[in-house]
Length: 419
Image (cartoon, rainbow, N blue to C red; front, side, top):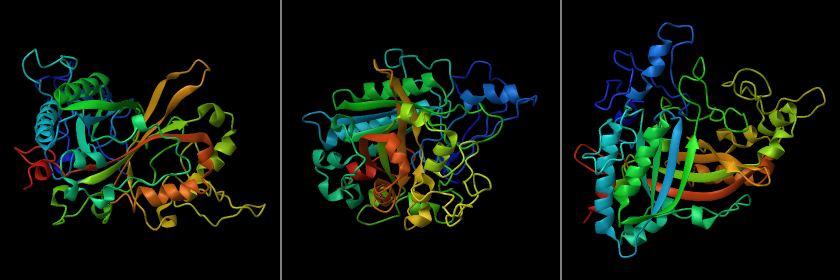
């Protein structure tokens, strides 16, 4: 990953993490473009130093792409969507994006926001902890700001899917912000700063909280697991792939120059019906996914990264990987090469009076064109994915995420200041 938003800086910030003086710094690296990290083994003399340096890791705000797309997964996340306030338009949106970008730059560098009246001090004792803030525009943003002619065709509303049970109040929005960090207080501090910066210009439409496994929690780098216990993200495109940029980032275009280096984020709140799922035997769960829960290997053998043999049959003559297995249906070579980087957070919003957990996945995927990335895969899943019996799509959003801001610029400046 060559772009600046994917580099970390292990120098101790002015708002240093307690106990990190002299620490070596945790080296972060993507595993399949998803959650990944490098850490010393538990019996290494450097193990303690690596873990305590976590707060010092810094992701750069400025760069060709916005941070939070190819940045390794963080352990805490917040998603928040805003609608512009009545009467607010392009001028107010530009001022807001300028404020948000300045706040993101300072917080991602581990700096305070200024005097005591403008900073809640929630994260005062911590370093930047790999904090990222990523900003996007929804379909409605362009009509609210008089920029309809600049709205990309790729931002057209997603089609209806059979598995949708969408709550419109928790879907879409004029503006979208993704926050990630490896410390819960650092992430929350950024969330409050973003909300405060919105002021009278924008109002919160919806907000969701997520989490992942913390860096250093396992003895070696691993692809993340979701709340079903499944390894999730095995076939993610890798930044080292020759066609990665072409599939994930928007190329330069005269008509949509403001989106150069940007990407499109599909955001779905997917509730997992965990009580039903956990009633299945281990073998039945493996058959639904098409992979072994233990190590993520395909049912046809090998390791997590082994290509599954979709034609292999067992002694009974049946396909080893069932015809409706999730792994079979989502294979890129089974979907016309559709590719997207999945970068989700798990969520848990409590347990209802009936004892049923409200938990699942805050699914976020990135692609250069959602009509070639997310849509064809989801349509195929709609037609017969065995996993569909155990999940429910409850909210949805699609956002155009501009390229990164250069030094002295703010995110979206090329759009909002175009003549």
